[in-house]
Every structure is written in structure tokens, then in C-alpha cells.
Length: 210
Ligand code: NYM
Image 1 (tube, rainbow, N blue to C red):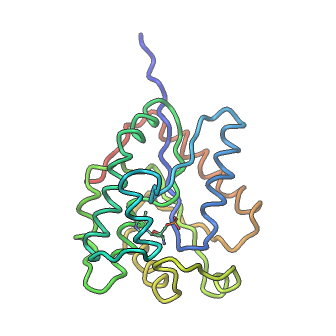
Image 2 (image 1 turned 135 degrees about the horizontal axis):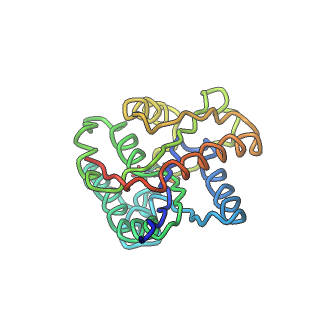
């Protein structure tokens, strides 16, 4: 009897800018690969692919776009990578994904006149993660970190709205992470959650957003 090949897990790290999730995602992928759990770091927006070039210009304020057009570009950026991501997961590679559809919705819907359910529509059909780790920092802790850069959205007021939107998107696959910890302590917490998720999802079919 043919045995089923375990699939990789699809795990998303979300949070406001400066919450430390990128550092943790990269560290974790190193750890998993060293421990013979094949995994790959992916991030959105992916500025290296066609749609990502325009997004990069938009984020660096080199071009202006209507909010709706910008939103759809971020979504198109995920759709551009979707075939590759699905293939990797099917091949048994765990993906640790730094930002995904939830960033798309939380950031766009933080803008005046952008409806949260409208924002979610173009995400329908994309792979649904097995777990979403939400890196949370209270405002005091966020102030203690290095200042924001010059990119679009990097202001405290805007980030506050993004944090409120994340709360509206949560369901049973979300796990809150108190990110106000040193890198190694946080790393241990994240590692345990991720390993548990990999074990639980390996024989479950990959779901899609509906
Ligand atoms: N961002 C990210 C969006 O506005 N929509 C999206 O769909 C995604 C994935 O891009 N401030 C925003 C959040 C960030 C910015 O991300 C760039 P990063 O992780 O700093 O490269």
C-alpha cells in the first residue's frame, strides 16, 4: 500500500512593523533545517518578482496609486507566488512566511474608506495557513525599539489601526505571541509552537481561503 507523503506546514508570522517577526522567522528556518526538518523562509511582499517591483516603488513612495490598486497588487503578488508555494508544501517543505494575506487586509483596511470584507475578497482561493503567529508589542515596548524607517505606513498611528484590524481577523488558527522578550527566549517559544504545528498538519490536506 502506498504510504502518504507528509506535506510541509504553512506557518505565517504577522505583526506590526518592528515586532521582531522577520528575525524570528529566519532564525527558525535555520534551526529547522539543521534538525532535518526541510523548511524555507518566504516573505510578502516579494519585491523580487514582477508585481513586487511596482510594490517596492509604491512602498518607497516613488509612485502613487489609488488605495484599491495598491491593495490588488499586494494580492496579485501572492497569487504570482502561489503555484511555487503550493508545490513546495506538497513536496514536504515547511514554509515560514513573513507576512501574508492578513497583512494585506490589516494594512489596506487601516486606510480611510477601505472596507475590510472588500479587502479580503481577492485572497479567496489562496492557501490557508496551518497557524498564524501574531507578534504583539505594547506601545511602550514598541517605542523602546529603533524608530520606524521612511517607508509608507511606518507611523505609530497607522500601526495602531493595523493592530486593531489584526484583532478583527483572528480565528482558531491564530496564536498571540508576546514579543517583548529577548531574541533567544522568544525563539524557544516560537520553536515549540511551530514544531507542534508541523506534526499536527502533516497528514491534513492544505486548506484554501473561502
Ligand atoms: N504590506 C504587506 C501591505 O500593505 N500589504 C500586504 O499585503 C503586505 C504583505 O508592506 N509595512 C505592508 C506591510 C509593511 C510593508 O513589508 C512592507 P516588509 O515586511 O517591511 O517588507
